[in-house]
Length: 313
Image 1 (cartoon, one colour):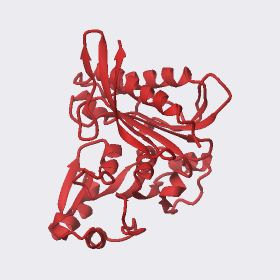
Image 2: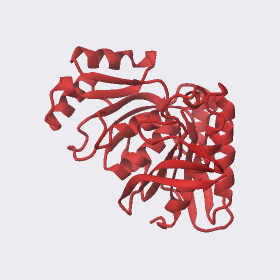
Image 3: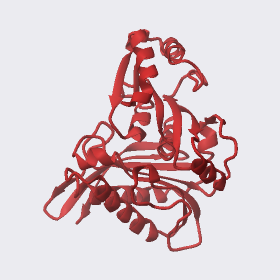
Image 4: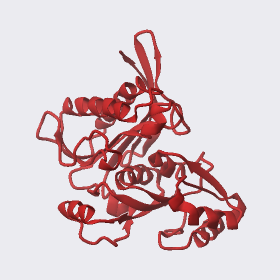
């Protein structure tokens, strides 16, 4: 089990990364905004009394600066923890000062998080208090909607599906429309998109689609804390991705991962707002202080709430 004292420290890591990134929001440079978050997150983690190994890092797909997979962070040899990061989920959102840009981190005990390569991943998620595997990654979208509606005692026309607004999701969009179901199409930021499906006060019933594998592991960390369901499968598409996956010990490229395959034990998840959004509010600055809001979760402690903190600049 993770020491509960780590939660406050991880909140600070996410909040300080969000603050540094927020200084560049609306500047039109997504890589600069990402780099600011990366540098802040690395600095904070290196000042912690941990031996942390990055198992989910920044992605080559965005040609972005990285906290490298395998990088060791912290000042001590104990406790040994795994770290998953997306210092700025929604780089374009931050660059354009649009809603829902967040800084995200999750930690687990050593060896408890899936080491996923930076490839794409098929994902599907729903919220808590539902029959096991009520939706399935391998089922048609229409069948998943019908099954979910029945389980939630809703009309299919009242089921809302969240996904990234991408051409590759046309079959999902067409299938949902054919049933008269509602859509929530997001431009970027699929960590938050997945989490919406597991929140009690959200209007999203299911998240589905293809996005980054690192973001999938982070979303799964939150959904485990929230009691939801999550399934995923890596999309390994070329020799380079095969090589990277094998280096991480992945050989079965058709494996369907369930939540406890991705996040095996205790986990802490924190996401701090860079810009205002549906999940959390963005950074606010006045005088020589800044104010953050972090969606903070700790699985073993059954802790999940939004935490507001104020820091000196």
